[in-house]
Length: 367
Ligand code: DAH
Image (cartoon, rainbow, N blue to C red; front, top):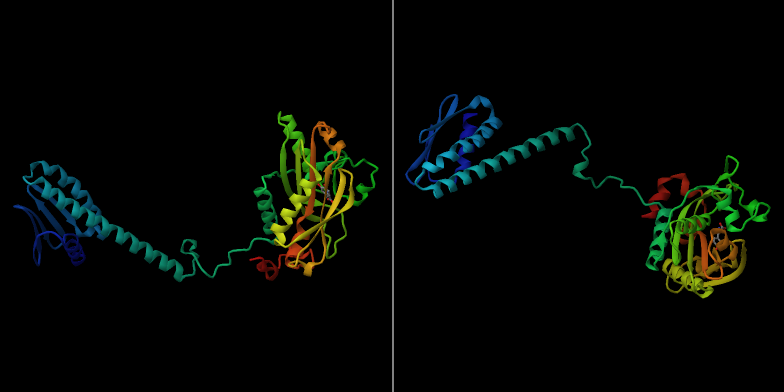
């Protein structure tokens, strides 16, 4: 211990004028001296009238801490010093050195503790580890986020709505009456008499418009609503009862079918490449009039074959009336698409069930 402490003090005072012999150190600042005597069981520090005895039994750490305390005692003596500046400098150099050494000791202790932990296989997350499997963004989230960023760049706002809907918002408000044949295609999971898991994200259109008007707002409005939907479909390679859609809605005073077409073309190009073409064919949806079905063709997608991707149209006047907007003043377009379908096209995935099977060999490919 004595040797350890001696060498520590030697290190701390390297830059100071020092006289050494076997059992003592004499530090001189101008004509002032600090003397350290290394006795058998303790180190005695003398400075003017001040004397401090530091027992080696304290252990190395405590010895260092005791020294830190010592500076506090030395400082008041400064006023008696002739050369305050030189003394102050000496003190601060010593102090810094002691602190540095304390830090080093602390680090060494921590390293040692860590080494011990690691030796017995204890995990240490702060170390980082290149072998760790960091996880992969799911194909579906990746496609959803890509679509969102395209729409955001066009000024759309993200809205997320409830998955448990009432029949009114899922059907009637969208102009799908109780006896409408479309209801049969969208048989769902009912929770109680009037509530069901939404069969599409189109209900988000109604919810958002209602909320906006209730809060005293009014169009213009441009939203995209991604989310999970449910239908009682038999499971096969292209059907799964739980799936995702993304809905889009724009309402303003002068919105035309040309705006819808331009928007979808921009989106298709951003998703499938600038040489993508789109085709719109008439379709039927109770909540849009006219309604269309969008197909895209891109050299990057199934060799340029036309692929049906989404349903769309001009918001039906009855939908506007249902939420309390005057269809003679407001116009709008809407579109809705399946996220699974786009991901399948995009990555050539053959079976929709792959998304939920959690086979790592599949999931890792989304990197
Ligand atoms: N909700 C329709 C479906 O699930 C998709 C759809 C079609 C959404 C036309 C729309 C639309 O907004 O205008 O099949």
